[in-house]
Length: 65
Image (cartoon, rainbow, N blue to C red; front, side, top):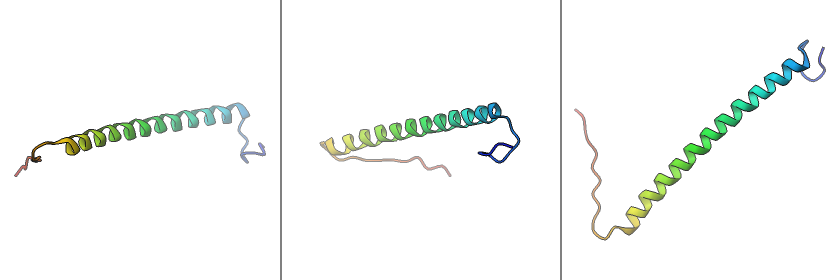
C-alpha cells in the first residue's frame, strides 16, 4: 500500500494522474487569464470612449418581442 495516497496503486500511475491534473489546472488557469485579459481590454476600451467623448453618448439595445 502506498503510504502517501492510502491506495494500492503504482507510483507511476499516481504520477501520471498528478501530471494530468496539473495539466488540466494549467489549462483552466490559462483560460481564466485569457478571459480576464479580454474583460480588461473591453473595460479599458469602454472607459476610453466614455472619458473622451466630446458630445453626448447614446447607448441603444435591441429589444426582441
